[in-house]
Image 1 (cartoon, one colour):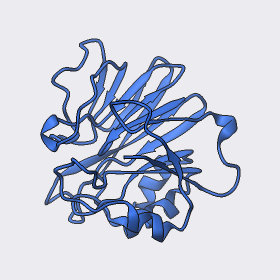
Image 2: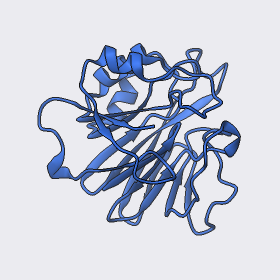
Image 3: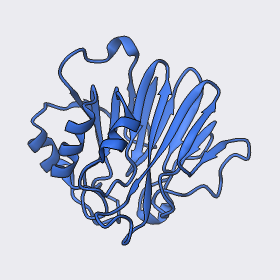
Length: 219
């Protein structure tokens, strides 16, 4: 499996079963959007920095509501959550996605704004191998809350997202406080493409057996 980060909350997951694009953004946020060529496109909520699906392939399977889905052998569960700390009164709802492919489980938290997950959400998420977690605060959980959510899920691999980048026009914090507070030495993925910040390759046999691993894409 290959995971490619394009910045903000946008990832492409390329598995043996098919390709998944999560939270494609519009160019108005200052970053270059990826071309949508994927079998499955997931949208956590309807804001422009997560919902740029105007040029989606007509044959792609678009998922933007909670529920259970399957395509090409990839199982996906969308779990309802809140984009804020006031049960959606400020920013509405957010969808957490749990993806099962190549015998691994990836969880993308979207723009989670709740201070912590409910017991029901933790149960619905289940065991996670790779967690994609927002850490920039302001519009999502901040770095301290992110660490609390990580302790609830206990993934094998952590990949932070939704934090300040050089050209990003969204006012959020950088990842430095999160990395320092988490206390893990990050494994850095060097940039290898003109679009995105590098590709991380992982398989089930390479998952850490005991301690969590922190993966940081270079920007």
